[in-house]
Length: 56
Image (cartoon, rainbow, N blue to C red; front, side):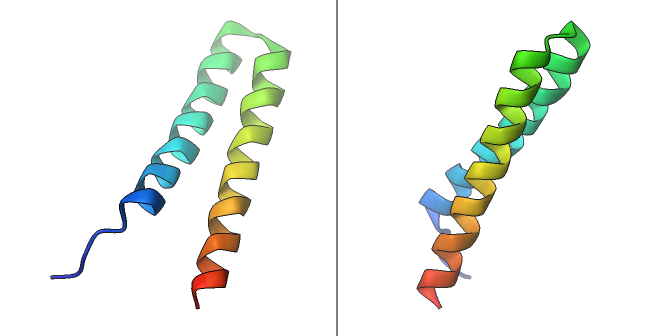
């Protein structure tokens, strides 16, 4: 069984939570939270991809 990479797992959960927050922001019709969580989600995802490339 492979070892679980805890920091990358937490980063993935943060990305998922930020996109869930985008959905909630759409439900509340708040454009500022929509933009904030959308940018945060893409920034976290980009950071995770860059970390993954550095490891290889």
